[in-house]
Amino acid sequence: MIKIEAVNVKKSFISRGGIRKASNGGPVETLAVGGVNLKIEKGEFHVILGPSGCGKSSFLDLISGLTLPTEGTIFIDGKAIEGPGPDRAVVFQQYALLPWRTALGNIEFALENQYPDKKKREEIGKKFISLVGLRGFEDHYPHELSGGMKQRVSIARALALHPDILLMDEPFAAVDAQTRETLQRDLLRIATDTEKTIVFITHSIDEAVFLADRVSVMTARPGIIKSTVDVLISRHERLNGDIKVDERYIQIRHQLWKLLKEEVVRAQSESERSPANLLRSDYVAAAEVGL
Image 1: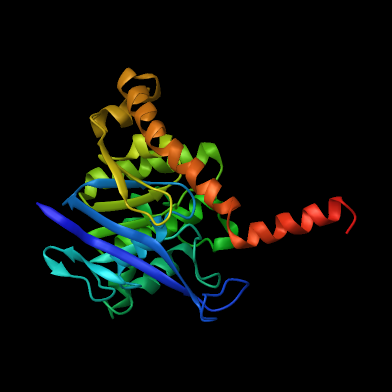
Image 2: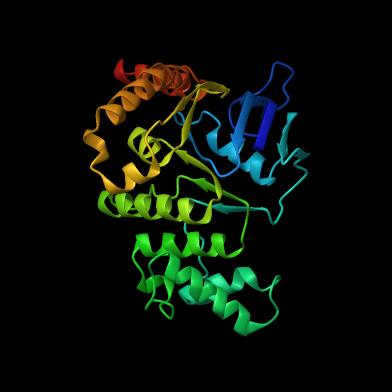
C-alpha cells in the first residue's frame, strides 16, 4: 500500500540578497528540488541519499508540510499535503530540547495539546523513555545528558505523538561514531516494533544500507531521484549479524557509491563555478600577483 507519493515535485527559493542578481536586477530564483517522483510504501524504512545541497532536506520539509511545493504534489494516503499534520513528526539534526525541562518533561510538553491530563502525559512519556533505552534518566535535564541521549529524547518525543510517518533529517550526524552505530540499531529495532513509515535523510552510504528497506539516490541540485535501490537484507539479519562483512552488504554499498560518486563530483564542480567562488578566485589571483 502506497503511504507517500511525490508527483513531479519541484521547489524553488528566491534569493533577495548577496552578490547574485538576475539580469533585470531582481532576485535570483534557485531551483532546489528539480522534479521528484517517488512512492514509499506503508511501514517502509526509506532512506534518501545524496550530495550536499541536492535538496534532500528541502524535500523532507515538503513531506512534513512545513513548506509547499512550487510545482507538483505530495500525497499521503492519497490526500494532497496542504500543511503540517499530526500524522507526521520530524526529528532534526539539532536536538531542539527545552533546557529548562527534564527528559520526561520534554516529551510531556509535546503531548500537552493531545492530553490535558498530566498523569496520562507522564504515563506515555515514561513508556517512550523506556522504548529508547533511557529508563532512569527521566529527571535529567538536557545539559546532564550526552549527545546520543539527547537525540534519544528527541526520537521518544516524536514517537510519543503516535505519528504514522517519522521524518528524520540526518539525526545522528552530530554524535560520535560508536554512539551513531548504537542509535542506528535502536532506531531499526524501534521501526520494526512500531511499524512506522520512516523517511530518513543521510550523507552516509553505510548508514543507508544498514537502515533502509530501499535507498533513493538524489542527483546534484536541482535534485531528482536518480535511482532507487532495494536493500535485500532482512532487518533481522542486519540487527543480529555482522552484516558489514556480508557480500550482499558490500555489493549494495558499492552500487550506491557508483550512483552517488558522479553526483558528488558534479555538485563540487557547480559549487566551484558559483558566482561567490568565482569572485573569491579573482580576488585570490589578484592578491597572488600583488594587485
